[in-house]
Image (cartoon, rainbow, N blue to C red):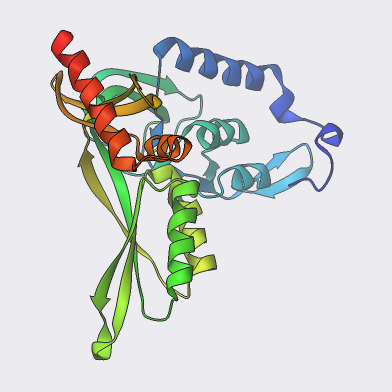
Length: 286
């Protein structure tokens, strides 16, 4: 943002002791509380002008605006700076999404009051600590979808593979019939909110789509772990899924079985069967 090397940047207000205390104190607090995810409401920036070390600047000041790229922000008729560069840096660093509060079991609430008084609302920052459904295998995700009638199979395959690399939890294509009876493809990507922008960029750059729709979905997933079993073809990892502590599914990792089959020149199904037999034997023996 400064157009120069990091070493050449000179701090003014943000280098003051109070800013350093704010940042270090927040980080220490987050660590002590054991926070795993950070979410925030859309950010109220304020408006107007203010004076700083380089003169008179519009609200939000350039540093705040730069830091909050990608965040959901808004303004109102309040003539004041409501988000400082220090606050923006903390939000941009820790928050994975900006929107409504997720469903959670509320465990604690904290307030921080500013020194400035506003006539129509309290000058407070509220932090709410809670446990979401993610702890029990349920989480809120985003589904991204676009309909394509002019993309080649080679492009679709490439995009699906790249989407998984970028952060898609699931990526699939479904044949559909579009307007005027044209055959087409519904391309769908399931992701966490923090990967939305990267996946949108991928779809716009790599496909001919002119628009992508996205919406929130809920997913409940079984608890999973990977264990290794010894077979005549070497160790094979087995993915084990449990429900309320009970094993309900077990599947050998196919790629590992495929590699073992190639090394020993046997059919893949033999390696898969050997891994399952050994896994079940271990289960019976406890």
